[in-house]
Image (cartoon, rainbow, N blue to C red; front, side, top):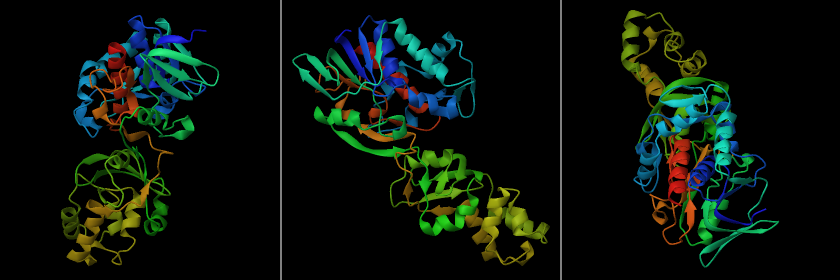
Length: 392
């Protein structure tokens, strides 16, 4: 069993496997190490088991980073179409679900098998169930210590992600390595994560658990028009996951449950044309019945005709301008990705190499680049892994 390689990659996830295959194609000897007993577990569970592997509309505006320009180089060099061509090469059937999101027709294991096959084609070695105890640099060589042996490599790539979904084996190991080599790390936070209610909201709204509705969710910086889902503890669904990446503790979000409708205008019209109709029945044409029932439960008037302008305004505000202050998030336990990570100021955007630590590279989620929901984070993994594999 060889102990020296051109490149050792820590992490057999999306970015690590892409990097390994790309570097291997150039004739590099590559070892990929992962502490898990299976590779690419986040790929396996993504997209409900069908893997939302990219987004055809992916562009730098779909990412959050302290440096909004950092991702541009990699994303321009490896596009969604490039990955689509790889998927087609393996005859993996796929479909567009919504807003450019591409999913496998079959299971996400197809994407994992494809990447493993690419690594095998170029003689990558993959060692699973292998912990890394430490990484040190000696002259122009890196020593990677495992419980059984010390491995050496000319270059080391950190591709072990962030701490989101720890049950999948996620950890903060990559940040530890970065800090050990003197690199700055932007404070990691859970992103694409459900939000929780305060106790005062949680109790009255628990009857809505399981109800989904179209919405526009926004803060002072950005808005998302997608569905939300009421849970036993708060709010989830695509719109909430998206806004969570921009939410800061103590701040409010605004929710419009009927973004295409001026509820006050329609209420006033309905009071004239359908005065005998109940507020609940009327609102049910725009919202799920359980949600309409909850919103109108405080209204004493049983007919629209009995509601004055103030009552109509109050009802409309609850639908079009629901002002919510979340208690917090569900944390890394359920977060799909991690916001923050290795400071992009420390890295070359063209190679992913640490500027002040030659031979040390960081790719994928461990870097301070966080994508929107819908395949963007995988596209960042493919792109950053590709450019690193090409340049290393």
